[in-house]
Image 1 (cartoon, one colour):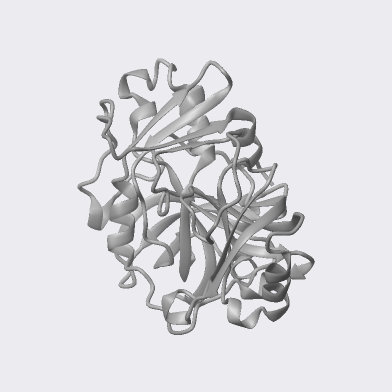
Image 2 (tube, rainbow, N blue to C red; image 1 turned 30 degrees about the vertical axis):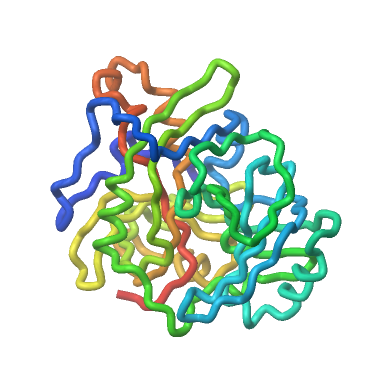
Length: 321
């Protein structure tokens, strides 16, 4: 299987129903409300083509289990040397994960426990403007501190397997595909490669978790990227529930052995599925833009100022289309 890489810096342009969107060709003006994320280059390179992260997680504060109509998650804040950012972990459909919930509660305020799950960098709960990887962190007094890094969904924590929790959320009203992807496509971004080996992403707040849409595969199963952690990635077009094209060429990300990942193992090129997904920053495209910003082919287009690159972690398949 070939190593899938960004198919070009224009991956993620809106088309069809949202055809008015375009990449910025001039630097994005900075504002006082900008969110600034500084990541180590080696972290970007390590995780840009990985679905999940494994960490030793010190659980600081555990939240309640949300009702399914509120998303069904249980959040718990913490810190890990493998991440070095304020982190919130989320167990999906937590009411059905008694062993994991009890293990998390028992570990609150105790020594670190092993945790695994899909990494997500997204700015829905950033609040404070600067998030610097490696900056010292103190224990968090609540379960949802300002953060840009999540382990969401959790696949295993403190010895408890939660893979079965990654599925549809009964009774939850998913976000509308047209509204969500219009939002994703319009999030501003400026990327700065720093002399100390870090990369800074200046961006804006971004929301719209749990969006429902139709994915249309652009690759044959044999061309999917099977990642080092056993996950799966491939490019898709995004359509609304009526089948209208919204966005072209977005990378879809699947956690190994979830129901969603099993459902796409043999999905034909141009095959369609109705799914639910969570957005995250596409670190592969962040890396691509940094590495190609000065290429004669792209320099005049200012690739470090294009809108925020994103991909979708698919957590549920609802139906074939």
